Each structure stands twice: as C-alpha cells, then as structure tokens.
Length: 272
Image (cartoon, rainbow, N blue to C red; front, top):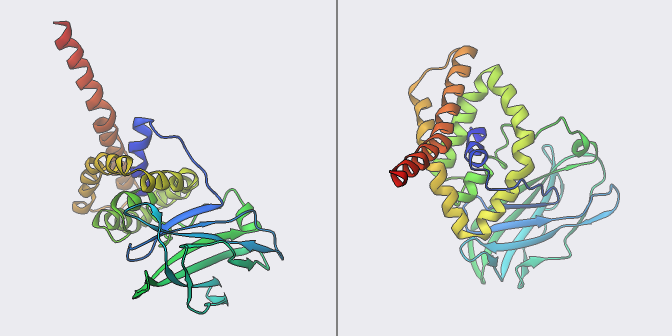
C-alpha cells in the first residue's frame, strides 16, 4: 500500500521530490543503526569506492567504534566476502572498494557485530545496486515485493521495518493489492514514481526529528482508513478498483477537504 502513503505528500504539496540514485540510507534489521552507502558512477572493470557511514538514529550523528563485515552477492551466489570482522574507530568507511565485473543486480550486505567495543547480536542491512543495463532500463521499476526496500517513508517515520504500521502497509500491499491484475499494474507504474523521491524524504525524516514527527502524525489518519481493507473480501478486479478509488477519495477528503472546510468556516466566523 505504498501508493497511499504518498497521497498525504501530494495533498499537502509541502515536500519537493528528490532523487538520490548514488546514495542510500537504510536501518539495520533490528533498528540499532542507520547505514548510509554512497558511491559514484559505477564503471565495469574499475574499482568503485563504497563510502559508508554508520549513523546513530537517535542523534543522527556518526556512531564511532563499529565492528563490521561486508559481502557482495548476485542472485543466489556470493561473489565477494564476507570480509573478516573489521573495526572502524571513526564510524565511517572511506576506502571500501569493489570491482563490478558485469551488468546485473547486486546485493551489498553489511553485518554489524559490535558497537563501542561491546559485542552485539549480529544486525544486517542489504543494499540493492543495479549496474549497467539493469540500471539503464527506465521502464523497469524496483521489485514490488522487495523486502529490503519497502515503505521507505513509513519506515523512517516509525524507526523500523518491524514497526506494526509498516508491517500493516506491507501486508496490505502484498496480500491485497498485488492479488489483482489492476493492483499489480498500478504498483508497477507507481514504483517508478515512488522510488524517485522516497529516499530523499526518508533522509529528511532521519535528519529532522520535527519533520519526522510531523510525517508520523499526518499519516496516522490514512493508516486508520486503510484498516478498512482488513474487514472486506476483494475477489474481483471491479472490487479492487471500487475499494481503491473509495479509499483514495476518502484520504483526499481528509487531507484536503476537511482543512478547506475548516478554513472556510473560520473565514465566515470572522466575517460575521
């Protein structure tokens, strides 16, 4: 249901669209750290520097003294690593390099096993990197069932992919919308739009706690409206379209209609 998350942003028209194709920030699977991965244009056969920052999600500052491992896989095959357990006192990696040999979709995985010289249960995060022709095809959106991408804006707002609100969005998307052709077609088209700016919005949430709380409070009514889908059976394309359009209109009414009505009433009250 990621497409309904963005209705709030469209309705308010308060946030510009960002595209950060060479920078990603994702939380570890248990939410202890955010990891930011940045890299320049990838050239096959040449070393690519993978600049990495380990970030404390509470302070939004680089977390010093991290024990980490790194690996690269392509499909089901590990093509490099995992490296030996290493330590960064600065909390950043500036000389991590990898040479991409061929086009395709790569999975770059970090494992964190210690913070401030204290061992912790292993936490992981995976970055999906499209190289060469895989990245050059504008008509190929991110996979709609990508467990590592998911609802970036909601994940940043609630702090973890395991938050109940994020899981609700994921379950509604996978178990309801993607079960119909019309829903799948919509998600395919929408993903091209959503992933063009959602990483930037998620970064703003992590950098600005006030904006993060504003987003969280603003999407709460929408999440409540989506809970309606838990109590209905959608067995046809017509039902999917009917419920989908109804929910979109309901959210437009909540986020645009109600504020407009309130402003008009206030204007009439002051006029009288």
